[in-house]
Amino acid sequence: ARTALQEAFPNGKVQAAVAFCAAEIAAEIRTLLSHDELSLEEEFSGRRGEVDVTERERRYDRAVSAALGAFAESVTILTSSAPSKLSEFTALLPPTARRGTVWGC
Image 1 (cartoon, rainbow, N blue to C red):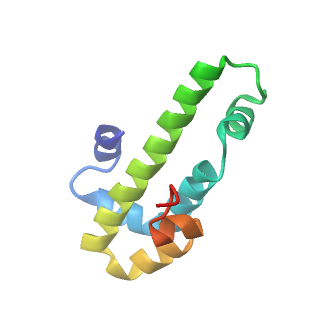
Image 2: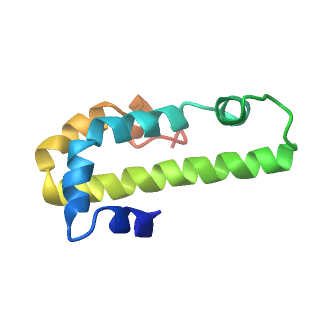
């Protein structure tokens, strides 16, 4: 995903794109993190409970991992290129993500 992002926005334009789209990126991350395994399956396939449990868990794990990776990458980019957008970005995320307690730790 990072390679595709760099190819889509070459020559350092990734920072400007992330700063410009920060609210949309945060909204997509929030949507992904608000799902459980079944609701994520329904959201993206239109079906609920039709996929094997193990495969559904794997898909969910990949989606959450990708969302958290996008969050980390966005924070890194915004911290270095648009610090004023960082608080706006994190304010749009779920409260648990802002507190650093996604897993209740």
